[in-house]
Image 1 (tube, rainbow, N blue to C red):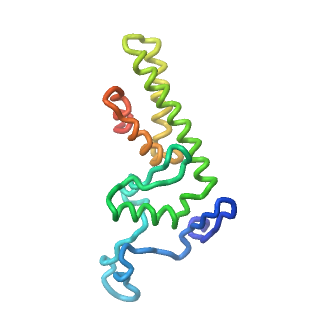
Image 2: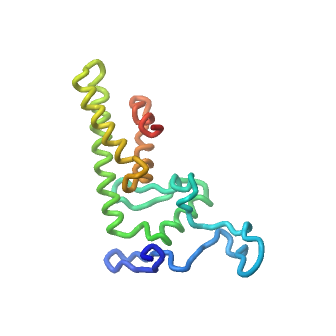
Image 3: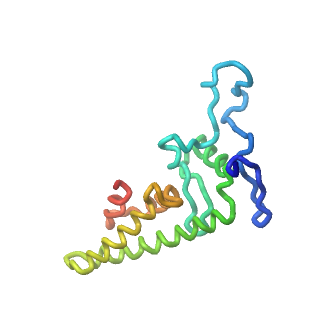
Length: 169
């Protein structure tokens, strides 16, 4: 019920919540009575669609949600979903930012340890511990895992192939 109710956050002046809204990419194609519903193209991202989660990310500096696509249609879908689903709600952004800070601290530790651990078994176990923490943060069951996956993708580099390995695991 909460997810579908319309609400306004007084503190950060955001408005969201789906209520009875179901925006389409082309409102002129809306079927009001009988007709071919396949003409309707929903503007909202579908959490049941296996690829839609990749269209959302967050800004590392404040946890604000953002579109990850440069495609105008996919970008519009992400932006509409952010507003309608109230993903820009202040307390949620603060929690998302906290997880992002934790992720990036672990990535920095991982990069440092990866370079130093080459040929040093005692440091390799430290690196593995950090890599396991990162893996837990991006695990699909973890809070804000899609956003953290997005941030980690931005950290890929040929000097750190382990990051790509974690993303593919």
